Length: 245
Image (cartoon, rainbow, N blue to C red; front, top):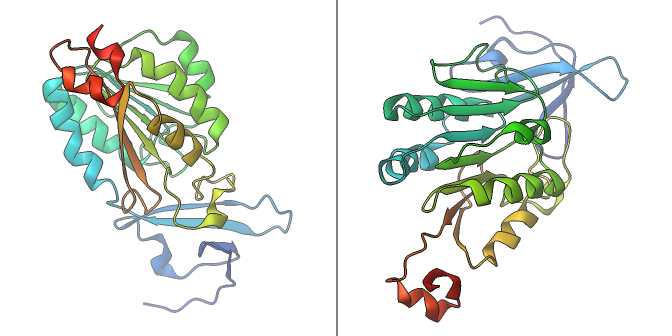
């Protein structure tokens, strides 16, 4: 392999930024998701991001189990590598997959058109997508704008719609470093999404479990909506009186 000269600058999070040229193996799209685009710093250089593929193994394992017991549509806010996983399971289960992002295939351009016949892609902001959404999904995945206000709006909208026993997944809920809670334009930092996770942990109508070593090491939270069942009276001891009304 021919060596290339390049200028590189690492930010505080280990991402390459401000590069003029890159080594040939930087664009290893088999093993990485790669984004290179104009810098917003006004220095005339480029920003670059590279994330290792295959970080959605936990969610990949849960999806077919959820659809087996609670069949129904899937909704994801934020397209990317995770979309290919949802599309595979949605196709196998014969359910609709709704994907929303401000650009087709997400910032990494993972795909350029719907992945199967029942894949509905909405290009735009989630706040516009939810205005016309009326379905009752079994699974919802939130990985769009990395800020509490946006995620809070999405949670408040989708949680009442999700089928009983369905699951809401949230990415970027357990940042490993305190300094990573400030969002940036690329979404490479988890931002303050953890605040929405903390609120849900105090919600008596759901069960919440967070996997800290998953999803690019930024945390994956699984929120299961309770099934109203008068025979599950042990929930009453946990303060979940609404479950036996």
